[in-house]
Length: 307
Ligand SMILES: Cc1cc2nc3c(=O)[nH]c(=O)nc-3n(C[C@H](O)[C@H](O)[C@H](O)COP(=O)(O)OP(=O)(O)OC[C@H]3O[C@@H](n4cnc5c(N)ncnc54)[C@H](O)[C@@H]3O)c2cc1C
Image (cartoon, rainbow, N blue to C red):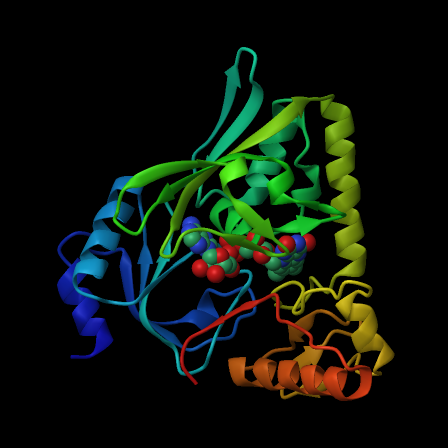
């Protein structure tokens, strides 16, 4: 049976109308590239997510939890399973515990940008470094997103999860192993939300910091074209963008995928790029880096799907 029909049979009755079958991911990824997902499921609530995941696991249908799709490349052959977007799980709330301090809790589908602006409203400092990162809370925790020398792990107090057996669980920061642009959770973990520990601050100062970061990003990053942020992880001693620039590759293209002339660690979609164009360009950069510089450039973007 075609994947689309398998998913229809498994989920059709529980979330009618909120499933896009055979959906081109180029319509949804920040890169505007990617083949079709068997289904793109727009999840309304945590309870619905639990039900959907249970059904998919029962029927052994492959699925991928995702957020804002700002760090994912789906190959042109598509994803033969369901991609779950936490569209309706966007709640953000302030919490205070005597002796514990000030926190913001947010569901996985909440935009990181909204958490940042909420921190300014609530006069809480610590998460300004996330300004301009276009992902969701779930994606940011999964990737241990970071900027300006800070990472999500620095502000995490706890992560709320759905485990492989379908049970809800809380993991405190100390129990989680965070790495460079990755977080190690037990297999098949889905992030439901996170609690961030912040400090009291002054609204004016927090807002100023956020707006400085946003201006800096506007100046340095090629935000005028679809992209997925940094393509490669930085090397221990050198920024990946600097290395690519040193190799004279700025501006190079495969089809409409181009190494941004503005920032060499960004590949931009100049119009009609395909995932294959982007992946070919990635492979070209990697092979040149290995031959000429003796280094392995590891993608920061998550690559899924079939060739
Ligand atoms: C213009 C631009 C600038 C960027 N700048 C930065 C930056 O400064 N720093 C940085 O770190 N990143 C940056 N990024 C990359 C990206 O925004 C971050 O990695 C972000 O955290 C990804 O969030 P997302 O919701 O889009 O995740 P997605 O792209 O949807 O998913 C990324 C990964 O997380 C997993 N995932 C997502 N949600 C869940 C969940 N609920 N449960 C389990 N797994 C989940 C997915 O399966 C996938 O493996 C940038 C991207 C762009 C386009």
